[in-house]
Image (cartoon, rainbow, N blue to C red; front, side):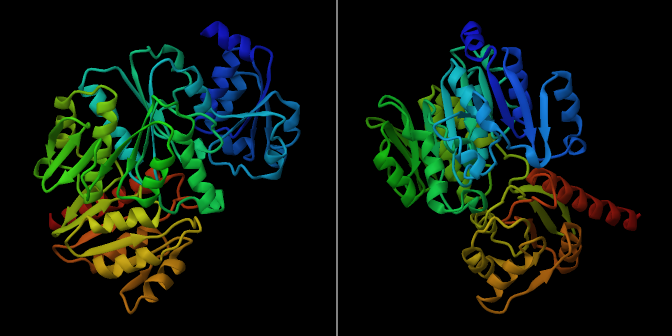
Length: 463
């Protein structure tokens, strides 16, 4: 394999656009196999921080600032960072002339182990993590990466054929990928990333890449409860499986009363009980069903699947209980970067909710989220670029308690004043964090620290 890769890249001229988390390891990989690399980013040298030193050690060309997309046609291949709009004129001009690739494309090209790809508008991180845990609990060597964890490009040659590789794949990573994993799963489809994809059709087309290039003997798993999921299943070229919270599906997994059930066409098995599941929220039952199908297709044992369904308590920043003060529980759901995800967060709780919402504007509608706020919340505190947009959407549904905050810190302070024992304060922003934080994780960590500060201050006052 190494000799094959060296023949592919030795002496080739390569431009790598975007010098972020996944592309720096990609550059090291290409450099190892003899490619001549131009690293390019709109950021200046100072903004690259510690990544600059790593790149300078490799002695590659760096093109930074406004000229980072110039003269790309001179290269044998161009690698794009996932989040860059693919319709930029200087990129579309390369179509049919220069090979366009990504870190994920090379991982899928060179990986000898079966790949289990998971995408969707919400739930993909939890589902990916669940599948990985089910494989590990089954004693299978497992690698988890893609849109979460460590980029796998530098490990890909060390992954044995008998391992399992589980990849969370965003729409940005799938767009124009031109290949599909051995096993594909689509959790659901709703509006997201229209600031980059421009239209819903373009966003859906990107998601379809996860299964559209599969051979007939591959497997794809779809959400039977999602009309778009059923449409995708109808056109999938591979073997189709479903999961559902509302209908009996075969083959696949479904919820029947308090039982999570798997049916493979001939046999039916109850593999989990809802009263033993520790993940909060009905939407997480869907994630468990989806993960069980995917893991079973990959050879996970039923014992492992059941154990994970009953023991898994969640992923950081996803309905994470970060503290309780004076009978008020504070939950960090910073991963909720779309209105659909915020709605799922709201529906998790039967107690009165004070919602903290707002952030970067991805050009999504807040109409449905506003209706759910009226149905589920006692108040909403808005902040960030979308504060007024969310406020207008909520008030258009009728009078409601809406408070505006300059930032997350003030939003937490306002929630402290409003909340009474039995309430839930929920950070489920419905928006991305760009412009205020580097990512949703940093936003969630800040929320956690703000809550912990409230608790510590209360303790000092008591002493």
